[in-house]
Length: 170
Image (cartoon, rainbow, N blue to C red; front, side, top):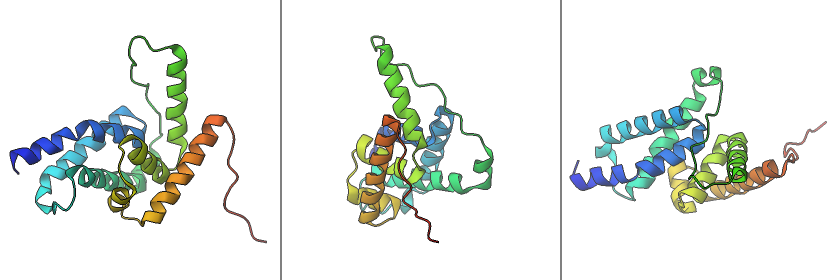
């Protein structure tokens, strides 16, 4: 691995940590996910085809690791318990902290596939096309998940329930 490739990977760590924290809702699990992603990237760097930016490739690795963990039987046994929010700058008003906490909780209540799309578009500013490639889904699926995520987050923050889209047939 060339030195500039290592630098490119290291430059992505803050973005990976932010995305992992949004996915997992817990600092320790997020750090574990980032560490595993970086380990996989280092071990498999020769497999990267250099067809896109390294950041998108790292997000794809993280996405796959996260999905593997969600699907594992062990993950279903663990109780999700969000940790405390990080300290905000000293001058933050108490209402700001409450709003951030509410947003974090609402985000964690979204289904994982909606949460990851929302985070990658809104926070990491990835294009829909890049996101479709990272997640391995069609562009329309990305747009649909993003729409549902935005509506779900809006409903959670407004304290209302979305009507179920699944209808019973008698």
